[in-house]
Amino acid sequence: MGRKMNKPKLFLDIVLGFSLAFLLVEECVCELEICDRRPFDTNTDPLPPDDRFAIEIETITDLYIPLQRYNVRLYSKDNKTTFMGFTIGLREDEAPNELNKRKPRRLDPGRLHPSPDSPGGKARPPCNNTVTQTDITPKTSVNALWIAPRKGSQCVTIYAIVAIKPDVWYTHEGPLSKRVCEDVRDADDILPTQNDNCQVCEEARYQLTFIGMWSYNTHPQMFPKFHEQARFSDVVGASHSKYFSVYKYNSEASAGMKMLAEQGNTTQLEVEIQEKLGNTVRTVIKATAPAKTNLTTVTSFRANKDNHLVSLVTGIMPSPDWFLGVANLELCTETNKRSEWAQTVTLNLYPYDAGTDSGKTFEAPNDETSPPQPISSVALVQDQGKKKAFARVRFDLIRTYPNPSCTTENSVTNEEEIDDGDEEEKEEEENSYEPPPPIESNTTPKTEVTIALDPDSSESCPMTTWEDWPCEGPCEEGKRVGQRFKYRYHIVDGVIVGKYDGTNSGENKEVPRNCLFMETFNIEDCEEECSEETMEDETEASETNEDENE
Ligand SMILES: *[C@@H]1O[C@H](CO)[C@@H](O)[C@H](O)[C@H]1NC(C)=O
Ligand SMILES: *[C@@H]1O[C@H](CO)[C@@H](O)[C@H](O)[C@H]1NC(C)=O
Ligand SMILES: *[C@@H]1O[C@H](CO)[C@@H](O)[C@H](O)[C@H]1NC(C)=O
Ligand SMILES: *[C@@H]1O[C@H](CO)[C@@H](O)[C@H](O)[C@H]1NC(C)=O
Image (cartoon, rainbow, N blue to C red):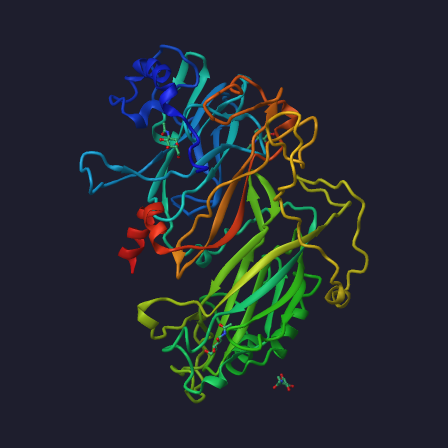
């Protein structure tokens, strides 16, 4: 129900007027092209793009992760040539339509929004997923925020049209067009991109949850003969800088790693990490082994500007020299040239071979590998040919600590709250942190207008209450675990802005500049029961896609 965002029919006449002049861009005035509009309504022909302007999707080159947020940047390459107008838009892929061969199905391109962090763009009704200039001041770069579509949406083209003067503009080909396709790996199998220029001021505390997912029930062919012997060692690791590593894939294991992988003894590895404490290591992480291989263990640790990577390992027992681990997972994310601490990161763990023992089964007797081999993945018989994670790690940001002496590019230190004792011992006891408050708010709205006001918004920047969209994600075994978009809108002079509810009264209202920082959308994790049937018509595309893969 929340999905009817636009009333495109209402606008078609107006838009078709424009598209006459637009015939020169695309010979086809089909629905898809209606919104490839010039930033200004002139009659001049577009110029072919030269290489002065380009569009980029930060952190990716050709693959996107479904439902992930990406900063899209349109910029002048020399950082000098300015433009005054622009349109950034999305174009979806098409898929064959069995019901009507001549009318292909249009897949979902995701959502494009004005960037919440850098004002300068606004939505362009009636076009869906189009961001255009808010003013005509000369600029060298602008941003928009793209939320990638869910699984099964194949490829999306993100394009830009640039106008350097009202009557001088460029078509969206070449460098002004980027086609990106779905990364079909499970999102939880992909490490976040490493950030070589982390500029956060605050220190962060993360909760680490190690979720064992290994049991005979789930991994009948990947489990030791004597079930009760299966266990994980303690979990050991560190938050550290790029100059330290606990282990490296494709490199030889350290003595401590060998001992952990072969015997589940963490002593030596802890020593190796402790030696670097205060230098290239911020916190030595240790969590007691989960009571069973399908149970969870939790601990917390700190990270800071220099030590924003996290690594951890646990030995698989019994096994020749196998372990689970993650190396150099990035916690400092970069959005829109601004560093911030990731709220939540999850990653699936699969067994690695430390390269120090040549045994091929869980129970194999000791068989020292000489010379030692580099760390590699364990080639195990896979249950039903499916790669199954042995565990998952989850990192949740639980709080940040302002650092008044910090001088990074995006330093915002408003409060003088400094964390006192900095010794690691003390930290282990400190348990008084609070998880971030939920954004949700369903308290009763004020009623001087008929619009439901968000009680979290201020009088000077009133907002509507959040509108929830359906929980999106695959329906597996009667349960959907995914993400839900939430939207709210600015209210200017008692009128809702940017919501196409048929009245369009808010269309000409400008949101005051000082209110642009108010978030108009949000994403939260969701979980709900579902049945496979409702799933079918909601995400046909992703269903078929998955079937093919399996
Ligand atoms: C572009 O120029 C502006 C102002 O001259 C400067 O602040 C900015 O750092 C430059 N950006 C790049 C990527 O060179
Ligand atoms: C805009 O999006 C809505 C919902 O996603 C869709 O029903 C509608 O057809 C789209 N309009 C255009 C012009 O693509
Ligand atoms: C863990 O595994 C055991 C043995 O396979 C099983 O009986 C138990 O239900 C599992 N527990 C959880 C929480 O999955
Ligand atoms: C682990 O190894 C150390 C020697 O490095 C030894 O002193 C210690 O007893 C071992 N721990 C266990 C539990 O076997």
